[in-house]
Length: 291
Image (cartoon, rainbow, N blue to C red):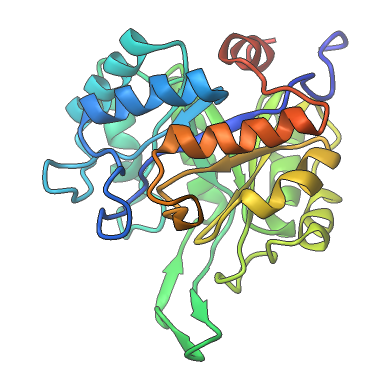
């Protein structure tokens, strides 16, 4: 541990290629394992190191199938060297046992699996209409659930990714590291949003307020802008020595036309280089996380 650098030299770019997004606004959202693998390869070519995906049925509906997860991982591995990250069913009403089952039962495992640190309201707000899209949504993650998922992910031979939605998430991560439940170095995603009111706003101040409470351990962290664009965030995230997690799963990026995930990655990677930095490579990120 003494020789592990606190941060990576390169900027970590994570492509969140589909989530549960439809194709009404942008038809380039990948659904099938073949489409996800092709998008992953193109994203890596454009500068991404990590590819995060959700399993999708042919009609685009979500699936937690272990077979679909394994096939997607295998196809991505055949197509490129991306660091792969699946989902554990964020925001669903599934039990913790059900959320872990697809990963545990998958014949081929991803490199990373996200663990959401804490409970919060699902409260997307539209200031134009002054209305909430959801008023009764909650995402429940007790300490026991977080511990169960973290230990289950590690038992599967996969590295847990720390998803920090609040200052409380960052403090919980520190406690889990102190207890030995969470290993270091850490890959973390810091969630910001202008529409989800239960998380920090997607501003430099919002990031700084959350980042102050991160544990002082070797960590590769990125900023995830839920329900919004990452394009305006690049300068201040890179200045803070962080990375970015974004893609068509979060935002259709109509400001770029009807881009593919790779085209969005390329736009952000170009800006990273213009700021005098470079995107981190998949082998670099993989080696860091296994230091």
